[in-house]
Length: 410
Ligand code: 13P
Ligand code: SF4
Image 1 (cartoon, rainbow, N blue to C red):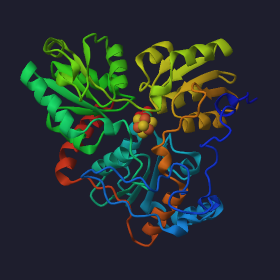
Image 2: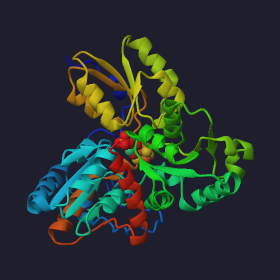
Image 3: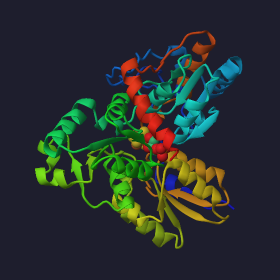
């Protein structure tokens, strides 16, 4: 019997993540009233690897959900096995339902590397994921991101220029061997930076194993861009000498001695979704629902992860909940689209989001069914819109860094 799930919904009468708004329902249709999270006016950040965003033709903005559904299905059928649609767990239901495969960042990168038969990989996720798919895919494959403004605010918190300043400082001060490790949530040029310097990529599911490997290769790890995943990983590995590198401060806000003694340097970046979860929310959930299991993503603050019963990637969270006995209760600290889907798919369990205020990932949410319909219909016509292509120089070294991770099978 499904228990009351209003914990996540009753406080938000104008809930932005309820069934997607038809673009036609917006009156009058204009670039400013384009659909929730679709961000028509937002320009993609300037990056070498990013293609040009083409404007969504007005006709797509006027289609009803039923028309979009019919046209998306028709385009998929016409493209057949030439097409694979990948969907991250944080995508809204109206998008995830079209995904051939759903997964976390790691699983989707493995899928992108393994589906050499598909000519088109339409990636319903965010920009860094589509870049990784392009890096790992074969030359004949084309990767498409339905809305190029679907980026990641955390990934944008580290850029190559700032990381190079940090790297040069460490080189000068420490003189020994630092190994760079970048979280999957980073631009391709940062993955290439790691590949070229003996470093590697990690995801939220393999960060401890990857950082352990990196420490075997050198004296310390420079970890970017997520401070919290870095700190949670350091804790798991029993590393005590961690420092935070603030790219806006001299020496990253540290003394020379602190940097020289450090085992792990954590870039000062964070996820705006996971930052919201607090220890107080956990205490409240336990007070209201004794015996509840609290499970959170490792992008949450260290104290939140410490207070939770367990933590792991989106894929891990899903597996734990799937394996639990009927009647189990879960308070989940991750993005709301996934938490709601879990609640819907497991009516025999009580599942709600730790944060009572709905908190979707606003950039993931930028992919609207109208974008998906538009890119698919263009593919049917032999036109590729919103293709993600990583330039050759960046591709080589970022591939090295990604392949090191995949080879570890961690
Ligand atoms: P995973 O899917 O790897 O757990 O990452 C969560 C996330 O924040 C993706 O951007
Ligand atoms: Fe980036 Fe956080 Fe959104 Fe993931 S949930 S894409 S880390 S902003």
